[in-house]
Amino acid sequence: MRISKSIDKKTIIDRVSEEAETIVREFSYELVEVTFSKEAGDWYLRVFVDGSGGVDLNICAEISRRLGGWLDQTALIDRHYYLEISSPGIERPLKKRNDFIRFSGRKARITTFEPIAGKRRHIGILESLEGDLVVMRCEQDRIMIPLTAVASARLVFDPDGVAKEDLKA
Image 1: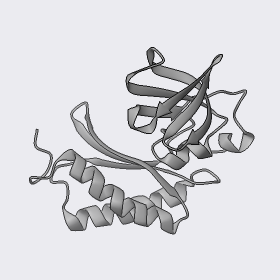
Image 2 (image 1 turned 30 degrees about the vertical axis):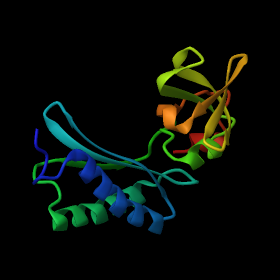
Image 3 (image 1 turned 180 degrees about the vertical axis):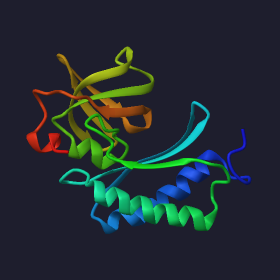
Image 4 (image 1 turned 45 degrees about the horizontal axis):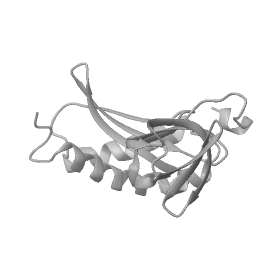
């Protein structure tokens, strides 16, 4: 299905990510992820942001206003869609190299493109990032997963292993 005037979904996500990155940095926030998907017949453009003290609703509203204005000006998307700005949540995705460093010591789920140590899905504690290898402790095993092999990664809610500041809304 054609999404926009000869612009594919990936291009929309890339262009929105670039603009959103500029806007969220002004608020000392981090752009975590941008998605554009069709759900139950409606299109959703979702921008996930995070900050060291959590995500403020007023700042999300301001990011929405500014990004929405830019989207209206550029006419990047030629169909009706909903724009949502929000926190990635407690089980946030791990997208950037720094995420694997920042969240070391936390429980995570990593899915790989191909089996590593006999499995594609790994749940355990992130230990470190050594070069291009994610080091993870899964029960008694210590495994090393190349970043290029990571299909998806996200934190796993672990009430015993979450710092109180991570639970602030």
